[in-house]
Length: 304
Image: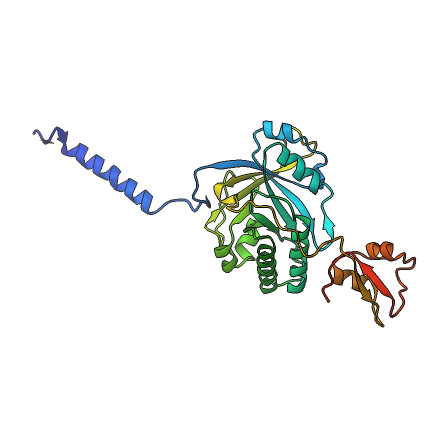
């Protein structure tokens, strides 16, 4: 019996109907929970560097296909990466897109503000192309609420001082278990997850803007292993004007009058500097002995 209809058999129509149903089902109920990149088409190859990589030949780096370089600028309230300025100048000179990251060590909101001020001071008068990154991964004895409060304070203060948008760098575990939904809703994510083709974690963010996929990359022009990254268009700043000079001018000298019970380490912490720095400026031979009512000069604005 001939069961053709419009040139197709009923069997073929049922076959194609089943295929269409399966496609619709697959679209409606995806079988994977893969963590997507942000909704952009372009992926940029990147690296992130610090003093650990030593002297870098950025001409060779660019010829290797790298387009974006994130540079460690600072840590805590008194550590500037030894290669920060060299990395910035040479990467810029070779036409690479630049971002900066600061390694946070704060244990309170007050310290977070000081670190933001220091970060802004170090990178003042530079012109980054990419969002400024907070690298907060060593939490000590802080609880989750304290970590998120410190993070929010640092991120907001840095943006206030620099006028630049911020991004959070985090591994997959902390992006899922530590950083809050509030932060995830406010700041893009630069995610570190190794050994996978694309991130697969079910975390507070629903997309990534940066993806650090290995810490043992090899790139021509870099003598040591280096972190490799992929970035989307969302990494770029809309405002690439030069970062204004900070009010916390590290060359400005201020004086503090020593009070009974003060120690150099305590004063150094207030000023975001070191005991050795203060001792050198004031020719103090015994750092364990300071004289009450003596005026001590410091290079940093005081926060006491």
